[in-house]
Image (cartoon, rainbow, N blue to C red; front, side):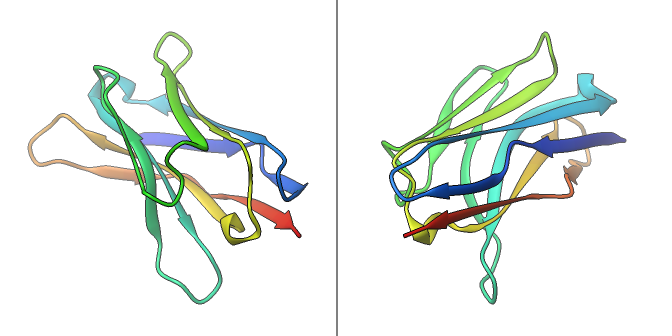
Length: 118
């Protein structure tokens, strides 16, 4: 079992920045990729970006160049630096990890609200 706790959400004006954090605990040795998802009201949950254990990153086209994912394995923490925020970035942001086990398991945090005002 892996437990995830996000923090760092809030209200920000368009063009501003926020940094989200996600602290993992439990069976952290099993973690492979760490990911950020977001879900706006009435819309499906979508992948924002991911980072592998080797540090390889991948981003949704809508955030590429504005958002940066990083991880600090010594602190079991995943980060999402969000710059040049837009109102359409408003959503609940979720931390997610999947495991390097068979079968693969994935775990979710409780989510943190990000609201960008115009």
